[in-house]
Image (tube, helix red, strand yellow):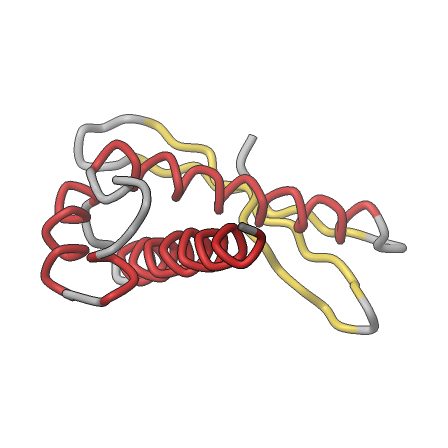
Length: 121
């Protein structure tokens, strides 16, 4: 029984990791999450074909991307809070629909390296 549970757990973990890699790729290439299901099916990877959970639709893709984003954001704020000094850059821009956007970047020192990150408020 324990061996079966371990195998099922490993399969679930591999499945989620495969989906997260697809989401990361799509976000990096600025692809719409509407194509998430099609890309997940097209890859035809064993981890995706025998997944124990059906997380390969657009809504699940957005939820996984949100979870990844929140984790990264939390890590960035942790780094900023440990920095001895920070610099803030603020810019206002308009997009195609003339909506105004406020863009905030923070420069900080972390482990003897200067980092600049976009922060979302």
